Image: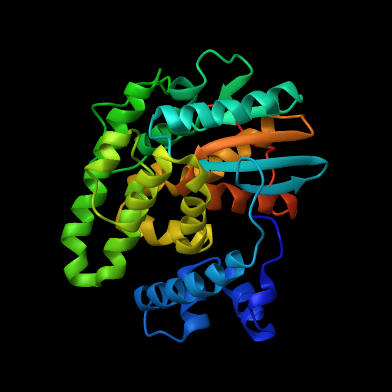
Length: 313
């Protein structure tokens, strides 16, 4: 997903997509769309983004090898690969084959917390990041009721069982918001939260019992046929607006849910750049995180973000 897909867009459409890509707040979307309020602007911008971004992606050539995005930061190429992390044998074999070749070529490999023990526990060269542990510590700083206060452990180690227990609570929170908010805000509200919730599934069985949003259907298909990962990745690339907008929108509805979903994208990008010195680094993350991690790597590339104050969680 690194090719120029603008061939299907007119010059005016390319300019419009660039304007949306540059949005950094909901108020920016109000100005861009002329909507009467931030919610209406968010909904309108998502529809426009999905159309334009979808056509941009459709013109890109089919990827070779493990699909994903590549961002070059200084002299380091960072490859972001979105996966289902549904704990299926098909995805395990597929990922291990690719990751083994990366390690043999001298590349660094880092995983979203929970993925390494699921697929790469016996591969010492594959490292886990600290994104969930960081998010939980940030959650502890919030005032008000917590979804997971009783589960927070300062020694949280990112094992599959720990991640699953936490994810389950946040899935319930997301679906509760879907049920309570869709009647007020409309179907787009529920669809967006469905996309967010899909990032929190950690097994094929959980995907099978999830809400029937498109994200779950695509994840179920890719979990048993990894050649379809590119379809799942493309879905999230079309569905999620630039990170500052998505984060502000979700924070307004549930700050904890924002911290354990979109905020972890920023953390994973920072973590990788803080640790790696390799010419090539591969990040294995949930497919819903691929656009966000890519966004923050781009901020580093453009000199708009640094890791000077990075601290391990």
